[in-house]
Length: 392
Ligand SMILES: C[C@H](O)[C@H](O)CC(=O)C(=O)O
Ligand SMILES: [Mg+2]
Figure (cartoon, rainbow, N blue to C red):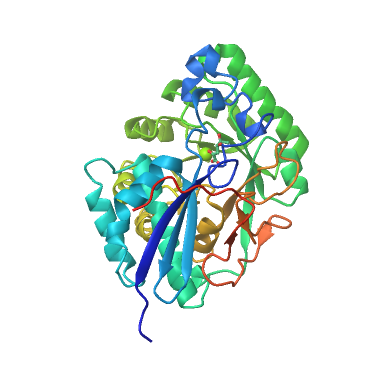
């Protein structure tokens, strides 16, 4: 069969949830007094949206092939991402065979190296890359996980991230990761409140259920060490993203400081094989958490994961909905997956990228069989208001 070529690339923005899952309305747990690097400024302590956490919004990349097939993907990136796709990256895609993903990734990465490497440029390359995988799998009429080597297990098992691990337990998840609420700027009182919260949750969920703290880049080595040691008595399974993603040295030190048996996890704001190579070679963590929509896409996650495997590290991708489900089901060193609770009170399961996608699968009793639908198996919700700010 003659492979189709890429005819046209389009980029859209959309607001209100979706891939930019921080872009929520008022009174959502995800914006309610969470410890952040900006919490040192009291005026930015109560709400992450107050310092602009949701400024970007979602980016939708659509790629149309010469046979009429259309692949798409969503990530965090908004208008800046749309500009990069339309004005810079499209040239490396249009006219290429839909199979030539490795070459297209390479050209996108090296052409943007002078202003890229991490952050929004890598989010954008990830979005394009995932749309390419969606397109190729649709052309081949297979789910993406078959292109990745096929499943190594029948279903996925999930832990939940949200404010209510106690409810997550009732919903069948294997663990609950809570946002840490108070950081170093809130002193001893804040530390006491963090530990009280953990103790209360442990009381509610019993001894077996996993409990974790997500510290969202907000601590220093000293505070993180004190938190980890004090949290040990309540059976904290891991401390996540305690430090700035640039502080590889701090992570290496923290990993030595935490109590034996407690895991250090990080990587959701890291990108590319080179970034993860630093984390792995410097012994920064036990579990890396690349976000497939931010780290360079599926093409890069395959490489990152192989590197992690050789370092005996687990890969448990951050969020990223269907894009991580199709990956996790194909890798032995990804034994479980994350589910972000996007209901405002974290009291029910709603699709992670709600309301942007149709057919987005959700865990039932903490488990999921990844659908066999071609591509990533999702459709854009026609009720979402897509905007195309740039055209090439
Ligand atoms: C809850 C965390 O602060 C963040 O919003 C999500 C995250 O880091 C995670 O799911 O991991
Ligand atoms: Mg996290």
